[in-house]
Amino acid sequence: MIAKITATGIKGLTFEQSLGQLTLFMGPNGSGKSARSQSLILALLGYIPGAQKTNAEILESFGDGKKMGVGFQVGATLFERGYVLHKESVQQAYKLNGKKVSAKEFNTQLGAVGAPTAIDVAAFM
Image 1 (cartoon, rainbow, N blue to C red):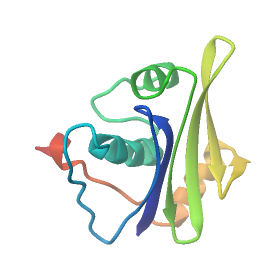
Image 2 (cartoon, rainbow, N blue to C red; image 1 turned 180 degrees about the vertical axis):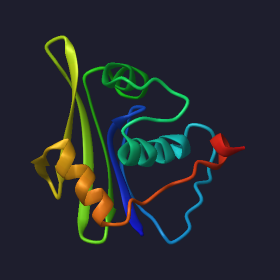
Image 3 (tube, helix red, strand yellow; image 1 turned 60 degrees about the vertical axis):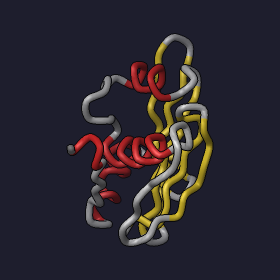
Image 4 (spheres, one colour; image 1 turned 90 degrees about the vertical axis):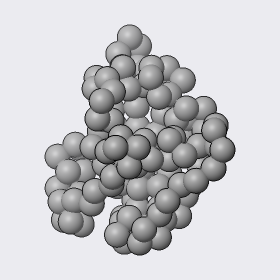
């Protein structure tokens, strides 16, 4: 089960949100509901369905164009993806419990915890 989500610089927000077995985000416009669900989906998949898929396009659309990070915790493992503008290209970096790892190791560990999923009800509808 996904216990929490984290984000830095997504849609101008930085947050850490604990999650229950079922979590529903409610609130007025601009309160961060979409940012939270998109952070989780981006951390899980590396892209947001229906949106641009290159690292540069993701950073431009959801971050400030320079740096952004998203993550989620399953059990004792914190999975994080970071998007950083380096010179003229955007690089994606992976971390497990704060330690840099390869994309292969990230995905291997993601599979080891059961490849969690999330559903964005608004996108689903």
